[in-house]
Length: 267
Image (cartoon, rainbow, N blue to C red; front, side):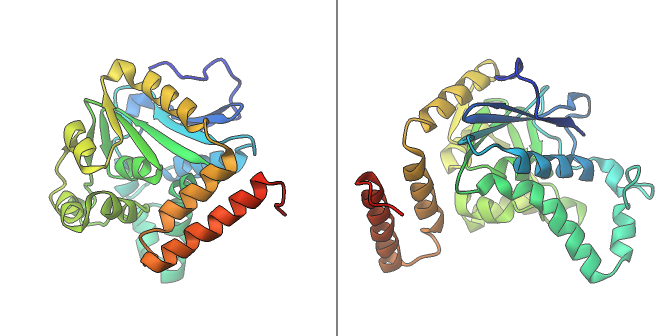
């Protein structure tokens, strides 16, 4: 698939991650198709850096990947005694202290966290395999548009691990506890039809139409005023944590801010 912003100079291009910005739309591309965009600590740091480099003009962030697979998950080199060059191996991390191990995992999670920021709407364009860390990276985004060849799978539990890159919270929210548990414990593939029917994906299209569908969605997301989008996103994200009366109060407070802003009475 051709990049929707490939003629623009990249703001970041390293360790399998490229960031380009076209006014209100930023595109983060995974750029190692030869390894099916397998993930590593270096890639996670590059993703974190991409989030920090976003200009204030950006309202929509598109996450996409080169090649036939979105991301085949964690690079298996992580489980070798040698690990990655210049990185502690996972075996070394396991032998370290609790605080050090917790801090390292927290650092890795940062690559998956900033996509939920209230000032942006993030859209994952997912084709082919999205396994393990790849599945969790797609889940980190607000919306998902998938090619009809997509295959999601959460394989961590099958490997004796757990999904720890922030994917469990959105997965349960999207498909419910029972289905999320079954997906994680069996490690089975979730296809495009199931992803759409369960709410895991917003839309499925043929692979050749994926970029166009995401581009159209990004343009539609820019149609509403930015402050209204930010307030609406915050309301919806907090709805499951609030009871009915608290949500009513949150709606009233948000609407009061919007009305005052539209009347020129905002702070």
